[in-house]
Image 1 (cartoon, rainbow, N blue to C red):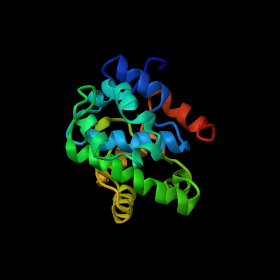
Image 2 (image 1 turned 60 degrees about the horizontal axis):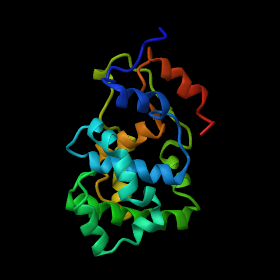
Image 3 (image 1 turned 30 degrees about the vertical axis):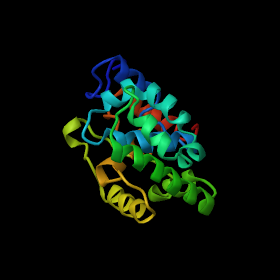
Length: 193
């Protein structure tokens, strides 16, 4: 049982992310912003590709300091488009800046993005008990609702599949397979993050 792990883990990048971060409830706005942006950049790509470029993304986007990203101008966009260490997609880069501005508005309205985004799950992680990757959905009614609401607030690259991946990443939903050694850890530590 000690070696049981989710089926999607294929290499050391995956394993480290799986063991240390994925599915663990997060309430830190900087990290929530980072994950929302990275999930958007993943669209059409593999998550492993994003994980391998994550440190480059952090350097390129001022460690996902939301106020800094929100203030990016055209020269910053051009700088990012020249950065071979990240995914150089013009729409996604512009979307990250747009999302930073929308993120700040939510922080101002709710006091934190955390308070707003966790309201979609009544401030408690959804605990699933899937036994196979085939059972895990790519979206749910909750991610549908989140996607619609974020789009209304000016976010982009927040379709329902991206929203569900974000929910999994930040522990709003625990989709570790029930046999996985991290499944119970995420439940046990849901108030520690």
